[in-house]
Image (cartoon, rainbow, N blue to C red; front, side, top):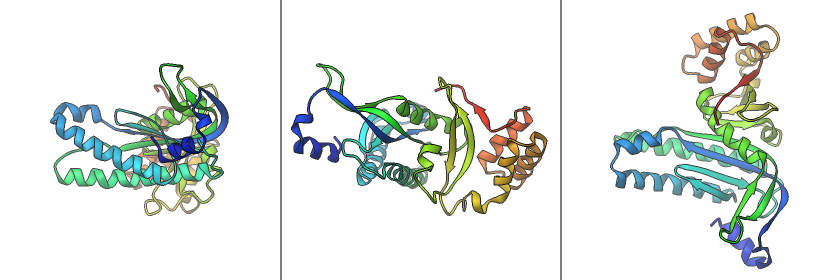
Length: 270
């Protein structure tokens, strides 16, 4: 269990009852790309050892930021902030936690690559909103967790990375609580099962990109998406030629080639 949850229940044993309360929380969802494939070609004992080390490192980071472990499903992790104790800076905590997780996962992947094992990228989604949080599950299962649309949205933002070519996909709601975040706009994502698009941002390492304010070429190309499809196509095509490793630029360039326009991006799948 999360240390902060244990401490909370020891201090407030009356909270050990079924039920929940409304609370604004932030959520970090992570997943390992291609881990199922890795399991197929790796000795099970070694694969389990690698996974356990990875999960230990990721969860330790979450606890260091005083996040609460919501669930672990295989190689996927869900962390929530501002529960059980209210954290006014939960959006900042969630984003910082996500970036530390990304950095740890990159180091871990590099170490394994040196040992001959190809561990997939860690994809991360971050979102916040009002949920019901508390002890749920009925008499047979006593589980402290959150329920609500923001939880599902965070999960879908994590999954969206695969289509977008990004690694950390963060909603506008989180960005609004993190002034100075090094991020650039992705677009309004029409996620599976959602009627209202979610404005999403790609959060980058400071050394990888100085942010939209200092990347006028990307900022201008993105602005043109809503104003001039032809000009946007030309701008992103030019950027792709200059930055062949920039996956998000490539994603937008391919959209333009398919005849799509605007910053509304329809994504299928979970």
